[in-house]
Image (cartoon, rainbow, N blue to C red; front, side, top):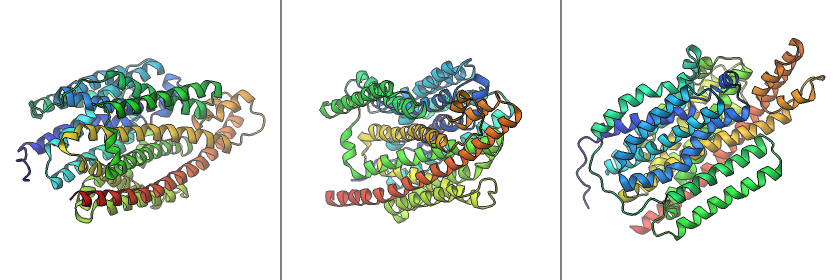
Length: 506
């Protein structure tokens, strides 16, 4: 069966949706170097800073599937344009938030706008590019924007914090939105084939509340060390809500999330790759930003510059992944990229960042390139296993994997870091117990506690905190390397099953 005639404006359409997606992905990581600044400027606790950074990807992960299905019902163009407007408004509100609570609320509104934009972008690409080779290239270019945007976020954040107040990291979105809105309005097709059926808002609420309750329980239990009597009911509630949501999807004639897509090995492999790879990238960047600023005493801008190798390499990985997958096949490209990521993480775990030499930049380049190729390979696996009618659902699933991975990466890295840091911290004698308890929470709390002590004792506490964080950093990167290695093995077998399933159908 011949492919339909391609849209002559398809590359301009791709440019428009990539521009729309760029601010969304920038906001995933632009705050990674801002933690110390926010802590000081807003008087935010470590938990509040984690929520300011984390609520955006977590809430977006819960909203992506509902927004993807809503776009299928009422039109991708309409939802995308509305999402751009919401994102611009939320950026202005976040920039001038006077307290941590209001900043968290503004970040939640940003997540709503981002969740409206992201699945629409993937859906447009899937519908616009029917030819597999062109689609691979288009997804590679989209992956470049995603990976490079996420990677360059810390550099842009650091540059802005070096010259302006912290709200500037949000105001930067406004000129982008003012340009992208009319461009998308002009270029995106006005006539779309819509999916019939109603939009189940109740199921969307179940999914969002279930995810946030579960993640809150993890943070409160391990990160904030709340008592089991507080954490366990919230965890049970979260798991119960997610279980009810999953059951409704299986029983419904028109499910919001088509769980049957997970039965396709290529899609399952792509989702797992998206979650783990994006989680590792977000968690490693956040950890590196803290190591560079708290331990090596770099400014936010210097921390961003230090991570330039990972940013440049991540930008190259998308197009390279499309070409490599077309030439050598998806399975070897995906597995090798994950294996190289594991090796780079293991190398960084045993490297002394005080004397980086050429080793650290080379390892950062390998990590950025390999993770970017892995993320784009996950896109090719998912979108290649879905037909055009399933574009919205598949795009929502993939985007959910990215956002959920980023949110969980920050959560789990943050929680794991807090636990390991507390165990490695050896404070000098004579520190009052309340201050010792505070210092054991995080490296940021070490600096806050040290200010309340005399100069010599404060300096000793900071030195102990730096030593504990360097040890924590090493443990964290080693654990991430092991996860990547296991993922490479899992994807090897899943994509083998997917290839056999396709061969059987033909």
